[in-house]
Image 1 (cartoon, rainbow, N blue to C red):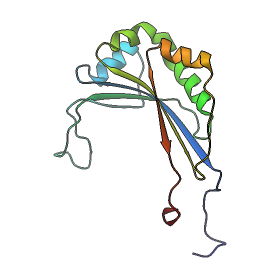
Image 2 (cartoon, helix red, strand yellow):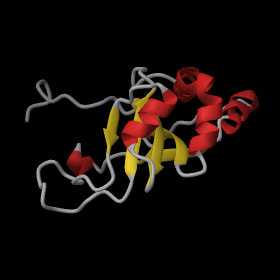
Image 3 (cartoon, rainbow, N blue to C red):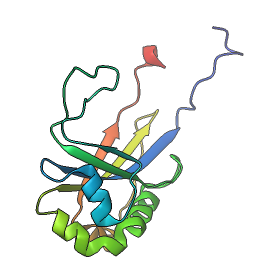
Image 4 (cartoon, one colour):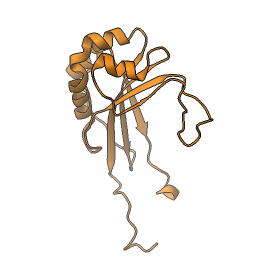
Length: 149
């Protein structure tokens, strides 16, 4: 491919994502929605196919309820956390009840083409996350190998 037509990410391009995940072997995804009063971005019931392209294949061991931050993927990770806390902050009691039968996770994703980047999650923000009973998962994605760009 000629240089004038080839398009690649700049070496400093980064992306971020934030999602609250609720997983359970005993509580259905639809029940999680009903108890929180929030419609998730995605949900899967326990026992449903892992792949919609292979309905006779592997089955999910857990129900999964996923709520995205709704922010652009170039937002700061702290903004994803603040947005997610804002979305579920009024559900503190419901989250505490779900925590007895569910895994509650605030999942943050970060990737960059040059492998560099970071953020500061302020103590008060982390206290808010802990106060909601959410575990924090930081999922880091390394740069792609040059042959895959």
